[in-house]
Length: 89
Image (cartoon, rainbow, N blue to C red; front, top):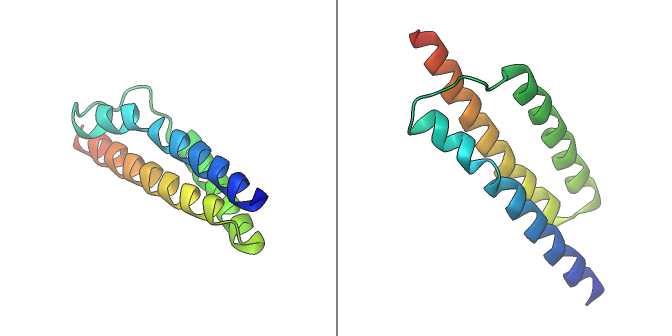
């Protein structure tokens, strides 16, 4: 039971972490704006998320695995959009 509670907290925290990226994704993909978005920062965040994903796999935490996969998808999508917008200019 305690493990279920801990994983539920992790899922909620991970969901909030992913939702926090939605305004940046909207700015890049819908508004076509990339000003103020730092690619080096996104690379660093990607590295951290990959390490957290590896950690989650090692300890077998489904909440860490799912939340970091979702966050990585958001960040990679954001990076792709920013790189494409900067190529156009």
